[in-house]
Amino acid sequence: GDQMSDSMMQKWATTLAGFSVVVQPGQTVAIQGGTASEPLLRALYKEVVQRGGLPVMLPLLSGLNAELLQHGDDQQLEYITPVEQFVREQADVIIQVIAETNTRSLAGTDPSRQAHFQRARTELFKVFMEREGASKVQWTLTLFPTDAHAQDAEMSTADYADFVFRACKLHEDDPVAAWQSMAREQQRLIDWLADAKEIRLAGPDTDLKLSVEDRKWINADGRKNFPDGEIFTAPIEHSASGHITYSFPAVYAGQEVTGVRLEFDEGKVVNASASKGEDLLLKQLEIDEGARFLGEFAIGTNFDIQRFTKQILFDEKIGGTVHLALGETYLETGGTNTSAIHWDMICDLRTGGRLEVDGKPFLVDGKIVV
Image (cartoon, rainbow, N blue to C red; front, side, top):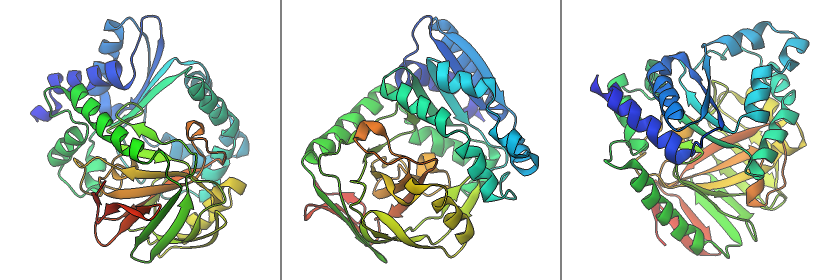
């Protein structure tokens, strides 16, 4: 419909290339995305050319990763393509568009093959994280409303497209101004949290304490993720204690793990269970030493996102939820945990949950009370 109009695509591309990342003349810009997002990919290419950037178009065909993981041997899984190397190690700017036509294409693959594929990329990922830490690369990630993503969300494609554009604030006359306003509100919360030491989460089958003392909070305001809307930090590595039950399924590589319950002692997952997909959960926890420790603690602040759609880019931003990631930390927070995985799991505090900071309420039933 008119949602996918050229003008909407242009507005999206302009916001991505001029706000989320700011493309400068002479920069190499990798534009990578599923072929289903062709209208947006074309608008992005046009925008990068207009800004004097050097566009490198990398369309992705769906299902290729599943082919490799199912039928590739060790050597094939470990092979890092020149394109991957270019994107992670050389490109000045990366604009990624998720646009799956089958979000379950990896459902039949052995989780250990996925782990093998990832482990082979530990070094590549590390180089990328170092470049990012040194501000040598700008990147952003968005999602194009395909039928498959709409099906996961249990919505019609037209309604889902509308949901995506609203979450991205593209329904506003000036999306950039709307994101800047959200950034100010998030900064207010970060300032309030400046001296925070202990975080306590309480909710259905959840009672977890962790320390964030002297860690840095990051304002996620529409730059690296689009849509965005979270503030996050890294827990002190050995501080988490207690247990947490995740209200929403944790989706990993197209596979769902439902009813995840984790028990922590001295920061480490000492007990893990799930009502569905437990095998995948346990395998991921065995990937390496860091997989059992938390790399991120975050609070979702995008109140334009109110429903769960089985897509982490949106779900972790739901206003009134928190999410914790097992594994790799973000260096800018001061965290030190390293792992081949970074797995976000969401805890909904909107019904009977609360988050306390040093004994003071911060979130009560999904409402920010500070």
